[in-house]
Length: 115
Length: 109
Image (cartoon, rainbow over all chains, first blue to last red):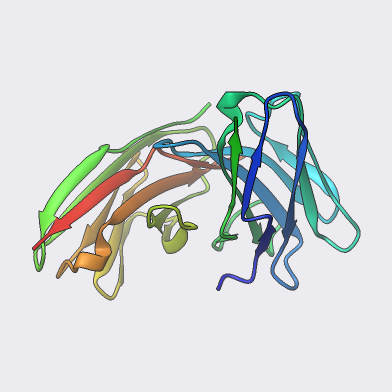
């Protein structure tokens, strides 16, 4: 158990809909990262937050948005869903704000299926 | 931008040694990670290299050559449970951790 909690574990929805994925980082970790992993693909970095502020942005679509709340949990909002958005969405946390000297701790992921 | 290359698949025999290579191009290198990921599960940390040389941790070792943009993960005394994807990831000056596509390792009896 990494200490990172993601909900829901599984989600099935239709094209055009909107979903929210939630992540609670490890106790004490200030950074939260979101990654997308499509079938047989590598982990694609979406976005990072540190202590409530956006710190780095990757290949995140405009239809997607995220935020980190004062209690440090984070939400990833996916809207106008398309079939291609079906993927595993991982949240990870670390205690650092950016320059890595340690590992990321990953949650078990939220599997999104868009029909 | 960053470019990370690693073989897509490898097969090895139980009890043997396997080396998984990773080459990368990045600006402002800040370190290289190896993660293990079993199918449908979360990636778990294996190793971190920021200086040239070999880091050994039990059956797993990781090597880095910054001048060559090259790393490898060495797995000894392979076990069936080592069948998984192995992800090479690089950090840059922009503080982003970028993953390669992963190498799917199949360990056969």
